[in-house]
Length: 405
Image (tube, rainbow, N blue to C red):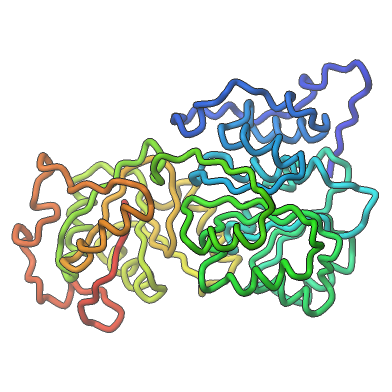
């Protein structure tokens, strides 16, 4: 690690190694700010150096709201979209408050997936690289437990973790949380779902009673409300969302039968100008089967799912982001700008209203100006009973969603 020494009186900003300026289009989700600067929050100069070297020039709206409140020690319940600077909103105050004179875990960031844990830990390391020794550790399921135990035998200040793995380490007595004053939950709606909430409750029971809790979530289901009422003390509430979908994403649904989805994708690929597409499935089997079909159709395609080795998943993400492949089939949802087309069956369409209400978004029918032969079942030239167009897990037609292109 290289630490830049700045003498008193130096123009420290001139010494920074700034990345190339980000020229991508920025939407109102990140530009509608109050005009604050990062220097306004009285942050350590070394932390400011890390912030600017990340390419972050000014705080986004959620960062403007979160940073001063989190620095004051107050609990936060924040509703903000993915892709609007949430990670910086909690990592900047978290790192500002790390005391390097103490050699114990001082903060923990809980995330629901391995990919998010690695992403957040990498941002933490980059932000803190000039702070002179902040030790950040990521621990998730699917990695070597022995390595994590050995790492925790050394000094660790910040832990980025998925719930199951960190609870295992806590119960083994190697991850000591009794002095950790801050816990962050990124994507709290997922962390407080039925799958995780018991684990989260257990983790919090090992922390001091006066700990600070920061919750960040795109949606506020009843599980988040219950948790807030039980564990948060007069939280500062931030709501920067009118709808869940980021500005710059347009969502449509197209009504097709299950067996015609592959044909629909093939037609979309052949008739629309698509630089890259991400196709979402809700099972690992469907991911692999669909990726195979797309490859057979002659299109370059990667796939990724939770049962794959972490090293391979990292490589696939890296290669796709660098443009080495046009199409990615995966579980989960992510992405920022573009078009989302949801291919739904007759039963799916009755669930759209519930989805729109839960996510506070609007999913419209595909515009009438688009050729119906792209998506309407009766316009398709294929036989709907043709097994070649069926990519279901067991060879039958299931009512499952393929997501946005």
